[in-house]
Length: 146
Image (tube, rainbow, N blue to C red; front, top):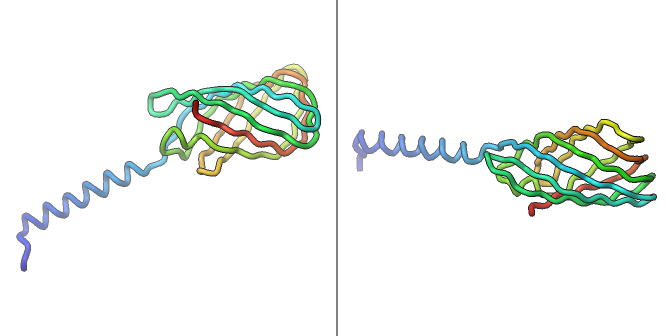
């Protein structure tokens, strides 16, 4: 059976339109993150805090928590701001972010960090840290949606 030219053109146009819609729906996007994290410890440390994600014009509440193990001493408050990339939906920012690092904050200091979670979300954050904190440790930060 032969298809008419008009039917073939219509099917081709419909296929192209569907392909365009699917490819734009699967495009990773980015958002803006703000976090306030309180950290304290002696050998083993803990952290907790809150923040927000702004993604596609909407704001979502976040909670943070984590553990540190190694040389950890003191307490601090860290305020971080930056972008999160490679996310498709707001829930992609939720997950566990791991890092190994060292730092020292006496009074007020600058902080910058890049982290990735198991979903591929990449946090690029910078900000300030206030308090007395010395660390050379393995740490993990868990972010959850509230």
